[in-house]
Length: 255
Image 1 (cartoon, one colour):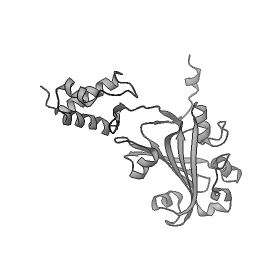
Image 2 (cartoon, one colour):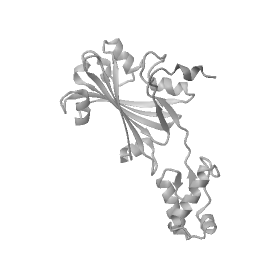
Image 3 (cartoon, rainbow, N blue to C red):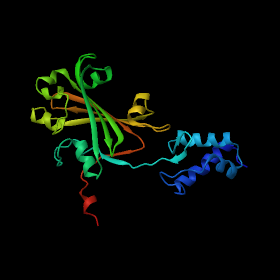
Image 4 (cartoon, rainbow, N blue to C red):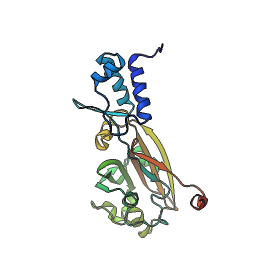
């Protein structure tokens, strides 16, 4: 006889069935009354088991409408190519990568002058509180919130690249624009972390209970100094990142 509480046994059984495809992504789970009869459990026990699956990000709940298996259409992000100008791109790398994947990109943008937060100032090697330009993008893939991207540029860069302060999008992408302005980024330092979302992140990305965010912080360096710091916050359930390191020609040549 299992020592697990009944609600955990119920959740484990449904979890296995979800994993095995009995309930595929988007499928509606049986009603609480049906699950109560199947497992010989009270309605409270059934609800506790379903809440556990919600907290794990496996199912979603709608008041009065039941529980659905979460749909995951994952977007594959190649972080090595994302801003590599040797790869052909039309416009900025987000638009290009999403379009090339057969998906539909959409974003909103705001631009503002902000004092540098301490963690950003440390990466940009400027004084905390000094002037920066923040370009904040709220990005979508197929109208589903995909990420937010906050890019900070040090104040000294404004004379050399004044379009960074303009409110509209930079059609060719900021990396190409900076290169054209004589500020070439020759290297990137990436940091990857995960955590649960803040309330604001959960609102912007429409994240349900139990879904973490993936934080990708990239500091771009010229030959002399860091020129920007980008913090991308991605939905953990809809994104996968990969990198290409070294010579991978054999991957494309093997039959």
